[in-house]
Figure 1 (tube, rainbow, N blue to C red):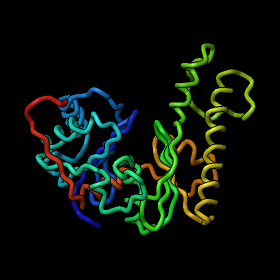
Figure 2 (tube, helix red, strand yellow):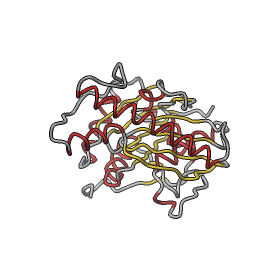
Figure 3 (tube, helix red, strand yellow):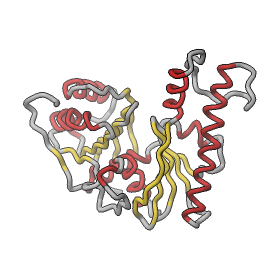
Figure 4 (cartoon, one colour):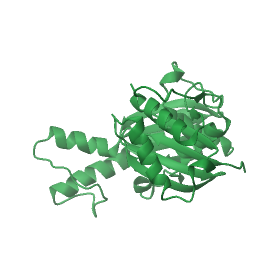
Length: 270
């Protein structure tokens, strides 16, 4: 096990997850709302505040890693993390992904979170896998021969609810939880049933199609992301739910990457 205390940040479209690893074990993690127009000062304040609730102090952090799918957030986070920990930040990208093979026509367009999921599984010895990351978008990513082979992107559960309630005047937002029955006898449960059972059916169908195209039925299927636990416990097509899969990929890049970024402390975050 590699020694060290590693702080990692996964900036998603809706939520940002900050995690601290001691070696390869998660010792603290926090889930924040992503603020599209946040500044480095705001990031600094938020992270400093979180660390006050942790046994880990800033001077104990040995490595820092960042993955973001929100381009405007890259500079503020790098600037704040560099200042707070006085260390360069390893930013996950197609150029800094531990030489992971990427079968994309334009590798730079592959989301860094998707690459991290494959990196994490490769470190565990997997060469082939399907990874379903359930966030604002749901990504189905295929790991083949130890590399990122591509995948699919569909709207996530909460994003689907947002579109439904915005476009249909008489449908109001609901809490997303499993209804007792598929066939609902009220509008709120009808929406819940459609979202969750509909997503489950879509998930199982897509996984089956990927396995068919992959020509390998016993390929393991992993789930992660904010909605991963909600769905994984209701379907047999998911073999393993791992809430820290993406964070582990960022951890590995933080430790072994060669794309550290430092930004000037002066100036704005534009």
